[in-house]
Length: 253
Image (cartoon, rainbow, N blue to C red; front, side, top):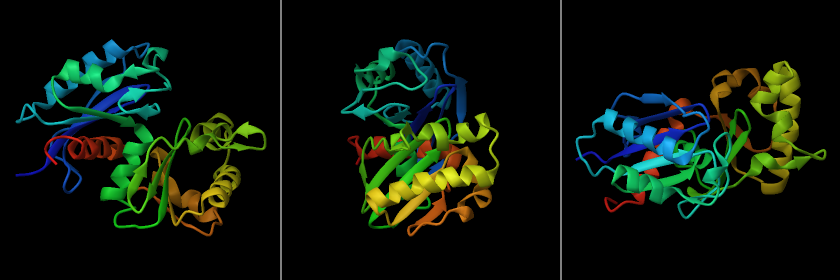
């Protein structure tokens, strides 16, 4: 029997999810998406997640659910909040979703979920050593892996360089906001990734986020010792990684 779990990816503007075959990393249902409720309050988001799960019509009522979320997550509690209500800070998110959905739920950081998907099914598959996943979007999300094992909540997008939180200069949103060319943006990325490399000496850097579809425009302009490659799972990465860790942390494993 296929190993299946539900993956839910909660963002500041949208909530999307699907049923996932966690053995081979494929969606086995349609991907369902709803707008994130205005204000991003916990109960409102939980109601939308419950509706999304019902829409997926899982054949097994006990399928575990993985939820990735834009926050530091420690032992099921969301310890920060990005683009959602501050009510999430310190909240027992595992408990909220388990009460609402009446099934096992595993909540994790969104960049960690994307990284898990890349390590299990994508660009980092079977790679040993230190691998750093980065997502270039509104900010810079990061996930850290040692010999395939996740070190959770690595907020390396917030490295201070030249006296500023450098995601404000190097995230894709900065390129858009300042109308930077790919050449101009690549110079900032070079400074960011060179600092990351100096501090951590990674064996592999994976670059995700929507802009990774255009990786040929900027990755070849970077000069690093470490191998740097585009992510493969892109928009489904959060769903895949959340589902994979929900399965791993459930009684099914």
